[in-house]
Length: 170
Image (cartoon, rainbow, N blue to C red):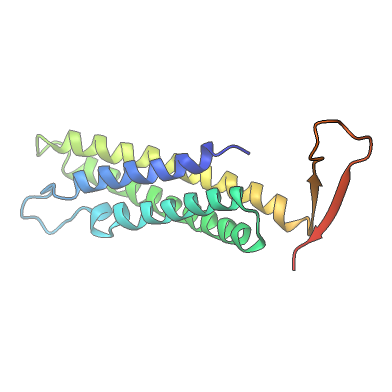
């Protein structure tokens, strides 16, 4: 499997962090008792943090296959999918509230809604990637307890018999 999904996880986390930092200083509800839910719960900080870690663990598990890295990648991708799901729910809830209350009061509310929609789409993409990687890793690691390693011949001439070793995880 290529590194495309793992690198995409890290880049999506970086973009969500940048968008979150951009929208966090918006004085959304001028002197009202309401607040911006997404930035108040700091989704733009802990969301990308989990996406960075799951992407890095997936890259590490792809480069050096050990039981600990595979289990860590599976666990972190599951956590990232859950975090993305929570973020999607919070952002949708906030957009519904904003559309009913603030959308027509402030000139920058449309820009804020646009950035929140960007966060929503990126969180949706991250959730799909993390869920797909979790399913892939679980199918690969949970059902098989042995790995077959092919040891290639060092000389350039092809040999009729290949060397195979069965390696079991401990």
